[in-house]
Image 1 (tube, rainbow, N blue to C red):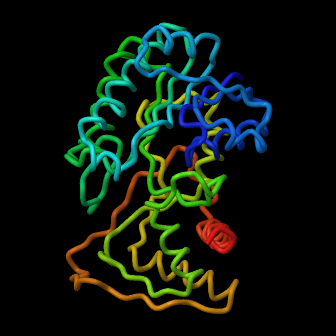
Image 2: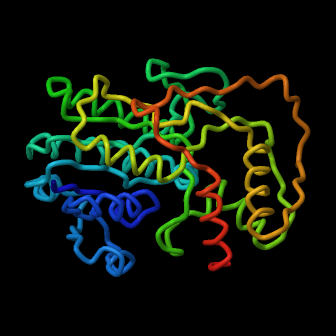
Image 3: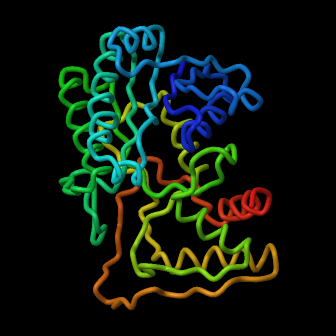
Length: 304
């Protein structure tokens, strides 16, 4: 199968490209950073996408079976430039989806986020919950989702929107942007033997391992889903404090030490409820957070 992955040298895209290539799929990378992945995936075809050209978007979609659209501005970038966020994450995504449909791509997969539901994920959320987050990152994803659903109104079997929980795992390359990821921040502090300051220790998050996500994509390539919007999550939640303690536990087992946790503010625990995100269709996947934390610690120790 010919699979085009945009953002192919980003955190998720590069992991997906390498993982899916192991199963005989022809990987096409929509990226401008060929040098980052050439040594790990020399068989990949690299396509330079002109996001401003409708003709070019159509051309890159021709002959492609599935598209995984992982390119986009991250949360911090969107907050710094909300206008650009809406243009790229939303408007460009919609144009790309239109090109994919016109070119006959069998499935267009858009990577969204569970943070579309709310700025504070407290309570229980399912795919039927109404998105209501006004943060520029979440809002750009919400508007992109709405546009995709309109485009594929008569071809609902040809698109998939995945609302991802907090994915943890090491990047393929040190140069890949991963600085804003909580797991990386915690592990880097631990490797450097620095105290960890938690701004909101009792905030609930649903964490999934990068291998959990990779396995989902492997199983879902030829799977016919009953829904077009899926939450890709574990269905279980940890507070930021609990996750930091888990990182400390792995460090203690692997390196023989842990660091102190300090809080910048005081929070009342009983105001927060368990945040349950409805799990993906493949509920039996192993979600080994400790294994990924171990890999991130090793990554940080070699790239500190």
